[in-house]
Length: 113
Length: 112
Image (cartoon, rainbow over all chains, first blue to last red; front, side, top):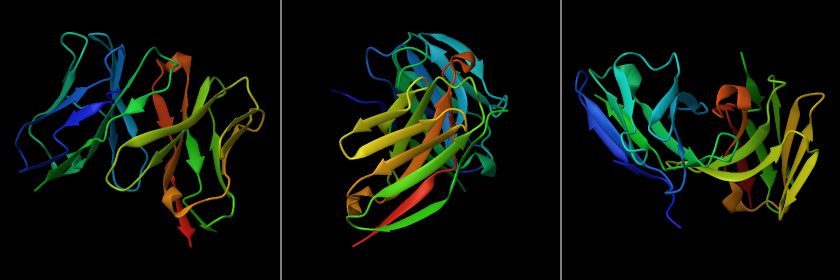
């Protein structure tokens, strides 16, 4: 049973660079969620997809952030012109439906130098 | 807006029971979840309870829900050192598209 997979696990980049993360959900899951977790805090919702449609974006998601799920399978999260405040763990989760348990990947830890 | 609160730390002796508490504000919550996070890792789903239930038991884990007081607890029986981790309470509502609202997490420390 393959769980949620995220790549890369760690990303170190200089301020101002663009970064892209990938999430591969559990194969039969139609819902895919992105969360951000900073040190000492619980995860905060960023955005979610049902199949390929992006249905909601949090106010946390500035216009430097964009997410896609082009074929309703894997998803990418891109951050343009990274800032120090973007340093966090980016978590992806998937579920089969809206009120079904979400299963999380191991996250991508982003560090901005 | 919705809010979920947890105490930050809990320390127990190996073999004792641990009880981690959580309060939430959204009365339309449909599911409440407990996740476990070990250092540098993602979140592992431990258990969850539907809002029309009072209790759910799963091996060493017991979840109690008091919907009137909006209080959720997770009891871990016979706590082991491998249970040391951060435990997150989360709620979701069908009105919110199923997104999860998390508490700040409770760091459980199990001493031998």
